[in-house]
Image (tube, rainbow, N blue to C red):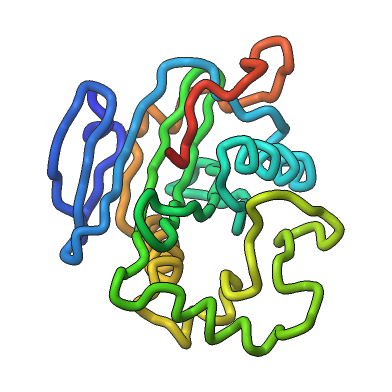
Length: 216
């Protein structure tokens, strides 16, 4: 059974390529969306019902991957608990890339839905430059979304806050958030998947090091 059968995408996304354990989609503006199935114990090193521990894990994981954590929380998709996350990273050329998605962890497998949006080369840094003017001279320009005392590298900055999305409706981060907000209405999860045993954090079962970099 392929991810296309496990997660049915209703509209807005067309299939670009199918693999054994991953389906690639594109939308009308060619932003990519993938649905992947992993038949191994999820590598989440935290209880997903413990908000502080979950965020701490994702913060460490993001930093180890060289990306900045923007958001992480738990949502419900078609009756299934999912970890929603957004990060940003530097592109290999110019500008930032924003990656958001949902991880649906189960006892011994997981499904990952991932959306990726790139900064427009013709308008690089416009959102950041506009917002940064309001924080000139302030120490809180770069700030962790949940712990203002945390200092890491790289880090989210204030222009990544959701309150600025309305001012920049075409920005890649705004698009990622819009897609993530819309996705729960656009998917159906196979009943067999819904019936799987839920993820339970057990340090003796979870890999010591994450085996898959969600944001690469």
